[in-house]
Length: 200
Ligand SMILES: Nc1nc2c(ncn2[C@@H]2O[C@H](COP(=O)(O)OP(=O)(O)OP(=O)(O)O)[C@@H](O)[C@H]2O)c(=O)[nH]1
Ligand SMILES: [Mg+2]
Image (cartoon, rainbow, N blue to C red; front, side, top):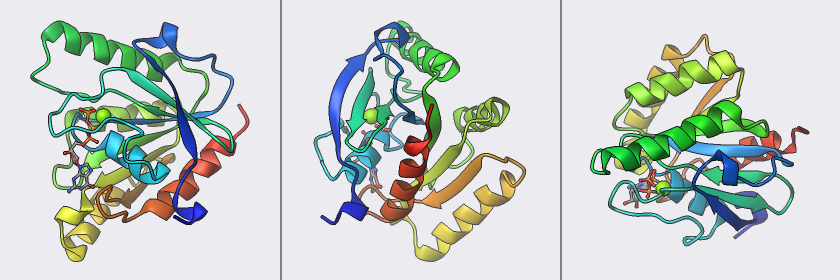
């Protein structure tokens, strides 16, 4: 696979909460989104390694904050998903607290990738993250993932709707993506490398 189409990364550690995260000595880009939107699959696609992050048909697969060191510098972080209804209330509360804590307090966070399902826009969690990133002045790239499920025309319509809705958000950018067939991979990698290069 050509280098422009993948990011060389290796698994570093899994953390149940902020306290167990690695020393924040490198820029980090975190993958957030609802459970089952495809965060882990996107990570696997851009690293060119299908087993890098755990993927599952059952939502709620990723239960810890998983850190990956990028060879050229920086880290990628696979976060547990929001809204996994079948987890016990206390397990759900625990993950969401660890994600909220991470987002609110992690000094090395340089940018966020919000993974959404292109067919289901406008969930309340996604909206909250958009508002939060604007207030926190944190760059955010919204992925309309699972683009392979829609025609090219419907993809363009979905993208235009998002862009219109958040046209006043100064830190947001949007793109279609498919972890399944690779649509949007180069565009996303370009964005990630620019953010990871940002000195903290
Ligand atoms: N068709 C299609 N399916 C996808 C795509 N990305 C992910 N999936 C599928 O969606 C399901 C969930 O993917 P995951 O990557 O585990 O989702 P996640 O967001 O990490 O989920 P949690 O870890 O539960 O938060 C799996 O069955 C994937 O194969 C995509 O681009 N296209
Ligand atoms: Mg996952």
